[in-house]
Length: 81
Image 1 (cartoon, rainbow, N blue to C red):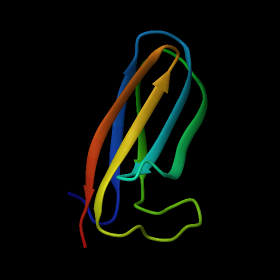
Image 2: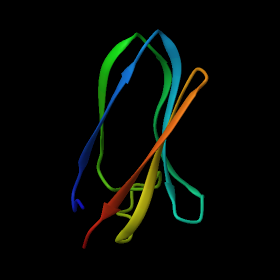
Image 3: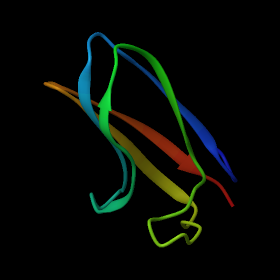
Image 4: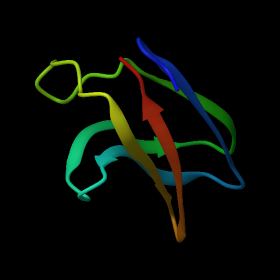
């Protein structure tokens, strides 16, 4: 769990168009963290626990979804109080 911010790291096997977004447990988009092309290698993003309107999200479970080319991965994250 995290309360103020968290780092999200990932590795790309090749240059790709990448989208990293946060979703709530209902599957609703909360915030897009990155949407552009990136080179192969290790990358890291920070999520400050805020939605796209800049408001702090409620405590609970969220999912970070990474789409890079044909690859899709998701990670569960817990936001604390």
